[in-house]
Length: 196
Ligand SMILES: [Mg+2]
Image 1: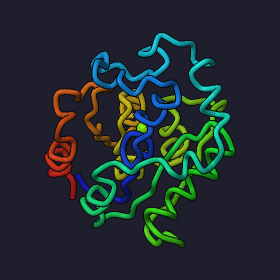
Image 2 (image 1 turned 90 degrees about the vertical axis):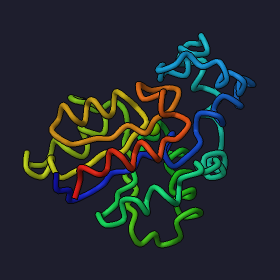
Image 3 (image 1 turned 180 degrees about the vertical axis):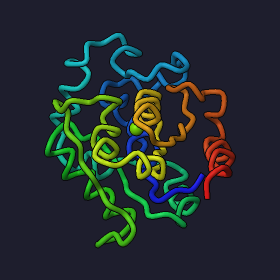
């Protein structure tokens, strides 16, 4: 399959969001006994979404800026550097937007030459998922087929595929590829072999 663009998710792919979010709640140990394949953090912690997100949404931009990168935050862009790369995210607040842009500049340089950060907001109609809605549904079917999403959310991946774009899940204990969670890049490299 021939690609025109690659979209890289931030949280869970380039950024260690989950461990940091659990730490906000004093629950970092929860990753050791995570319900395999279960994506929702509030549900895994048996919390309401409001109780889970309120303290995180109250944090300053620096919290987002200072999130640790994943061990492959340099290798993964290199694996797909033969295509134009767009970094994607779905920040819930303007504060998160600011912090995420600062994170990207901190780790990939300013102005980032090969990356484009596209914040997305909830509240929009999302046929086929947030990212599919923003990136794919304004494109022709042919254009969609050339847009590869690399993401850690089964919902985002399935929504993207349903909207006509190819997608690769980055294995983690919180998604369907949890069996490959110990070597996620090995899995991604295998999946990338079908694209040119
Ligand atoms: Mg993600």
